Image 1 (tube, rainbow, N blue to C red):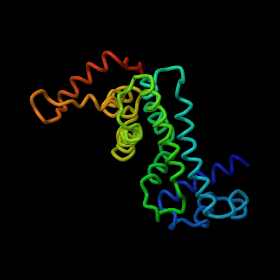
Image 2 (tube, rainbow, N blue to C red; image 1 turned 90 degrees about the horizontal axis):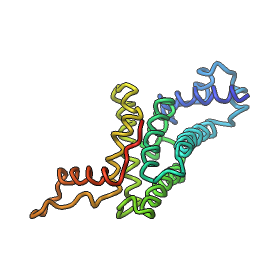
Image 3 (cartoon, rainbow, N blue to C red; image 1 turned 180 degrees about the vertical axis):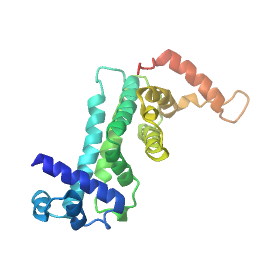
Image 4 (tube, helix red, strand yellow; image 1 turned 45 degrees about the vertical axis):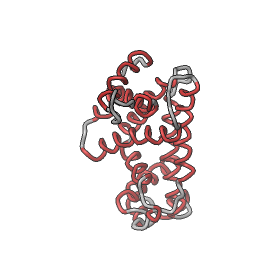
Length: 225
């Protein structure tokens, strides 16, 4: 039964992604699965329940993969790398599932019937908790952990969306790429790197990068991919 249910979900996910919630019917899903309508209704009582199951399954799998990748014994700075690498690896392993998640995340509210606020809050809180842990140990200099968490999520999302939309090869989301992205999290979680150029009122990215390199050399050891 599990195999049948999983097949229905895989097919339905593809249908919803292609034609949207309003444009997808149970009949189109039944036709695409090659199962009978009673078989589909045995597992899901209606389209809304099927779609809700897909949403929670997708986000739960992404979240659990990320949590499983974290080593609680490592410093928070290295756990940041693990978070980035885990999300990249999950996208490479399950690109269709991640496309579905990305489409849901950035869809207009009227495009589907599911309230995603609790799911998005869970993801955000997990990033925030990691940053707050780094702040408590003195690894991170952060003005606002919530804002830093949003920025970190954005850094991960833009790389994943670029991979899915721009035809990059798998190396674009490799562990080596995660290492490249990882130091830039210091600009997100350590805003003190953005200090003013001496004798000027302008904040200098060049100076920030120079000081970032010094900070990384002292405070961070880039993980081995």
